Length: 201
Length: 162
Length: 151
Image 1 (tube, rainbow over the protein chains, first blue to last red):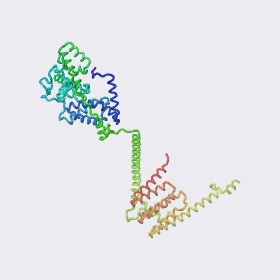
Image 2: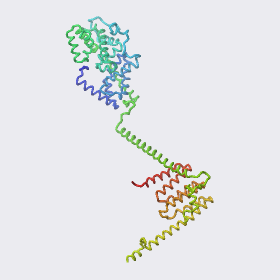
Image 3: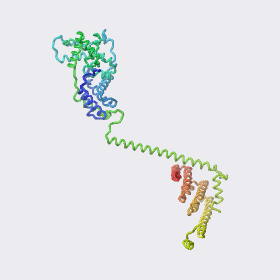
């Protein structure tokens, strides 16, 4: 059995509830669409924020995403796959509007001799062993994430922060499962490398 | 399984994305390999750090109103795209009635058109036959076979004369 | 005794003198009508030559406005069509239409009415009155459909 994350019975019911909202929203029930918005707006915002690195732009794009989603609801064939479909639209929106190239490639300049992404992180580290304010830890984590190449950053965010399944991530980014799995692993290794000085291990 | 193989599957193992049999193999290796045990622990801790300390933005409280207003502007009731809008029962009934009426009118028009064509054909047949019977302009029919001649012969011989 | 009763009731049995008298009376009536019609026909032709078309129409009408037996309708139809034709060839197609129109009512047979209506339609068509022409042919067609023998 392929694991798809910790899918409890509550999660399955949750998905069914979401599908019901989607069905109603398709018929023009704005109340149901608002429930979907309330459920996913934060997640979409945080995903887009990490792609564009600007809160203001992320907020604008999130709104545009949801307007587009409502208009395209009729094209969604499987209501219970709304989540992945939503993120796919958000991702496409970001790359159409703000990127000249797709994130499916990583330039050789961004990879080291082992094929690992080269990260340039602003040096905000403190000495090991010193306690850090939560805010500083946040900066470190965001810095590590923000420095990932687009191709790794998006799958890292979708897996480690949005906790989507690998299959859902392949649906969103349009790459193979093997490619997504490899990219996630590399992204995690790169982030681990950046934050290792702040790990107990 | 070697450490390189094990390492490539560690993230998937942490995410619960490995098939059961593969997961068992990786765990078995980790249990027996200290460097891989440390590697896994480091990956887990990094993931926990990210989970605990990543920035969590919240949508602006008025954001939904902005979205709602935009939906009203672009046509909120268009989740089907170019396809039909969702109808109330009355609108559906009206649409059905109008469609039925339209079909009836269309059928009636078509039938009238067919009838009109048949009538024109009926008329044309007779007109052509009568024209064929007409003598040339300026010439009275004299041929006995000509029905006009028969008419004239009849008038010159009064049909009522015994 | 029976013969006396029957004779006195006026019932004309075939072969009886009374039947013969009735038949003779009918023949005499028809003969009279034919005679009148013959005269009217000549009057019509004369008026036609004198170009008095309106009077010709009136005189022609007297031919048909008699209580002709049903079996005379074919003959009357031929006469009507013939007189109308005369008017057309005198350059009076409108008068021909009028003649047919005025006297159509005296024809009870569907077949004869169809012929007259078709002729009216033809004359209207020749004058460019397409709507009236179609109307005449529509009536003729409806009559024909109604007169079709039942299978």
